[in-house]
Length: 456
Image 1: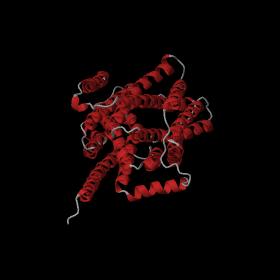
Image 2: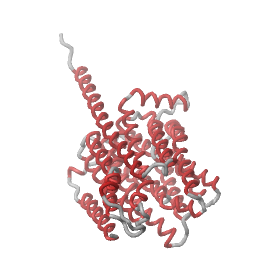
Image 3: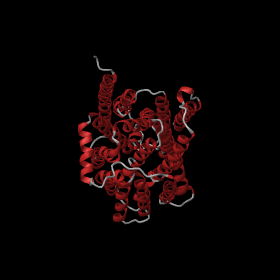
Image 4: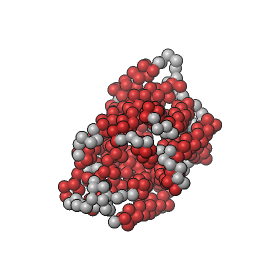
């Protein structure tokens, strides 16, 4: 059965290579040298930032367990991270809009480096501080960098359609290739070189420091609404008013929370789903396979965006497929007889679920550049970071609740819940397309009326 893993990985690698090498003129967009230089600089920085994040992932839980903490203690540490992101995210998002996005990106680097340093201590309180710092850093990672990119792209006068090129390439490299290489490098440092589970965190701090140096030396500053007359409370009210008064923004926030909440829940569920009877599965290799699937999705997204297909249209299909893939564990639990052997290799049901999970990760690869494209269209510039972190409040609350009750429900119930959320996202995406089309048609009629000369 071990050959199955290599076949899946090889097939995915071949498809990704074929898609990237077989791009036609329709899949490529003619751009300017100035834009290419700007894009490459951002992708380099984004890849360094993501490498600092991905290097830590495989060894966080293991490091805590090596310090002697049990599952409950470790669960509380993870809840602290998501809770910190939920509580402080809107504050740092508003500060990013007011004080500068470049400054917020530098703050991300410093905060995450400090979080990495706390991993050297076996004291629970210090590790808890590290998780709080990590939660704040995560809020900045998923808001400040994108906000800086969109504002700087528009400030330089580049074609708005070119944003999708940067988004898709950043996800392809930062969330795909970099994740695979970072996982292998972390394994090399911790196991092959014998430096132990804290070594990947030191390496992450080094990559973050390099990225920070590039930001300080080559990035310009941009702001949302930097007026001194507006304090944080006023910014919060403005962001909340924008969400409440514009159905498109509210729908986009709900869609993002439903999908990302299911995605983060999947992160905690895939291991017990594939090894319900403690089957021996290669966690690192499966993680690399998932990241390769994400690369496949981002490659597909770059083609869809290059051909100017309507994002609101094809994302309905993506969410529907995602809902089906996370419903597979429920189906296989009833239709595929379970393996009676404890331990051993992955079961037939596990193989089917792995294929479904790879499909889900491909949908994740399509989701990221597509949601970034929609955010750039619908979220107002003056409060971009604030609104984006408002979206993360229900997401982080949902993940905290799931983590706290992870042992209270059967795994099939958890997957079923995620499947329902993804189906709801598909319905809301349909509504967003209808509202968006109505808004465009109304605007077109108004512009036509203004252009028509008055009748004598």
